[in-house]
Image (cartoon, rainbow, N blue to C red; front, side, top):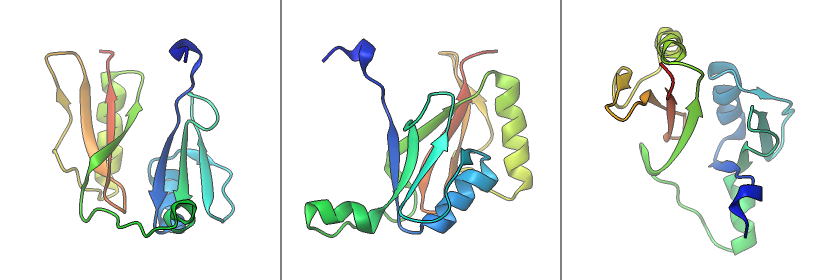
Length: 135
């Protein structure tokens, strides 16, 4: 496989599609044309099928098994949203703080390796890193 020609997408399996779509659409302000159903695609600069939600109950039917989601913060998955600059990271943190969200690791931090970020959890406990590599 030639990785330079591979596009990568990320899916979060959701228990409650309506609650999860509302969070990503209305709180994080990602655009979607979702009008109900088991699949919601979000439009990002990375292109189509870069990020989507899929109903967990429908997904596991292909494996003929039950899926038991993690409780609390999901420590096995992270979705990273990269913003243009450190200032954008700080502005997004302030905007989300005013909406009453909680931040598992606290306020934005700039690391010695050049990333400034913070984390927020979605309604089902999936971690979202919001950061930038540009001062």
